[in-house]
Each structure stands twice: as structure tokens, then as C-alpha cells.
Image (tube, rainbow, N blue to C red):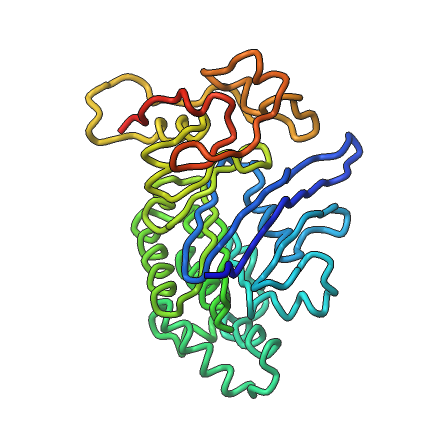
Length: 327
């Protein structure tokens, strides 16, 4: 199938008083209809900036190059009026913090109605209000007729996230970008939100980009996964292949840091030493080299390219030498 979203060599740079910040460096991602792509990595790895650039939501000072194609149509350089037609109806986004994304002075129902009527002005307000109630019921909000008249502060964190999902799917988009949709929610609500996304995918056939730092969340929902580090994709493939046959030391470190019930070792949890590099002063070689346990002199001078190694793609000079992943 032709991809519904195709990102090629995306570069995002922010000019600052201290220099140029290379937030995204040559990212390439492909999403097919009805599939779920998980994008994982530490905070600051470029996950959210990549998708904000895709939707044209970065500040005007950001310098964005490369290609972003939605159903074959180039989005970069598109006139703002044309891009607004794509946002919400073609590609919708569930933002990371629902409480700061919802307008506190408008009711939940009003905000959903506004999104519907922007893209479908032929729908009158009364019909849009009925649609808003249906959407709140779809995402599991109890008493949707009553809760549509409530304000965001009257919703719990989980209900705010459900309301954001209702707003995102209001215009039946082809692509849904979910940016850390389970952050700050307890594990029970997390499971409910993931089940809801799974149901929406099955019922509406929407393709999903799931941004997360939680490998367990990605494993339970995604078909493919892209691991990002320092603004670049360092490993990608199907979830099964990446989790079982990871070839990049960063991916392997993330997997090794997950606690396992079968572990009999009572020692400290595995961690990746050091911290992510400054995007203002990136090293000449591999950005992960200062934290890598497999570093060689070549890693300090030559930045590895993403290439096919076995059943995955990995950006590591010594990917072929990696042994089995700890299970």
C-alpha cells in the first residue's frame, strides 16, 4: 500500500543566542494506512519536534527542510490556509498534556464543536453538538450529554485525555499522532487509554504515530518502531524484530533497563550511563559514543548511517557484532 505519511530527510534547526540547535537531523519515517508506528527515545531526542514540524506547528524561527508527504501531497512549504485544511481532518494530534491543551474558559463540548465546524461549515451548531456528545460517548465519557457542558477543570486527568482523543477523531483523520498519551496517568487509566486507541484503530482504520518513552506501551500497540537519539533515528523495524534482535547499543540499553518479573538478580537496575549530548555541540562521530559500552576509535570520528543489518535497520558501525538481546 502507498504510505499515508512519508517523511524523508527531515531537518529542523532552531537559531538561538548560543548557536544553532539541530533538533532533528535527517529523520525518515513511513506510515502505512491502518498501521501503528511507535517512536521512542529519551526526552529531547526529537520525537515531538519531528511531528510538530510535520504539522507545521513549530515557531516561525524554526528552519525546516526535507520532505513531508501526506497521501502523496507535499506539506512543507504549503500555504498556511492549505495546511490548516490538513490539520484536524487529515492528520490530527493528541498533545502530551491535555490540561494545557484544552481551553479552560470554554466547555468541552464547545471545543469539539469548534473543531468540527472549522472543517465542515455546512454542519450547523446543533448537529455538531450532537456529534460532540456521540464522540464523548465513543471515548467512554459517562453521561456525555451532561459532561459536554462541563469545563476542563471539572474533568479528571484521564477524562481530559479522552476528551482530547474525541477532539482528534472528530473529523475522521487518516493519521492520528498521539504524543505521550499516557503520561501522568495511573496504570489502570493508561491501559484504558491504550485500549481506546486500539479500538479507534480497528473501527476507523486510522493510522497512528505513537510517541512514547515507554517501550512497554509501544510493544502493546505498535506494528513498527523507530528509536530516536539526539535528533536522529538510530534503529527501526517491526516491533518483534527490534525488541528481539536490536542491533544498536542505545536500543539494547533501553530494553535492558526494563525490570522483568523473571529476574532473580536482586542487584540495581540496569541503566545507560551519562546523559544525552547537547544539540548545540554535537560530536563529530556517533552521538551515542560517550555513553556506549561498545565504542571504538572509529566511533569518535565517523557518524554511522542507518543501514539494514539482519531484520532491522541500525545506525551503528559494529551492529553485526551485537549478540542476542537479553530476554
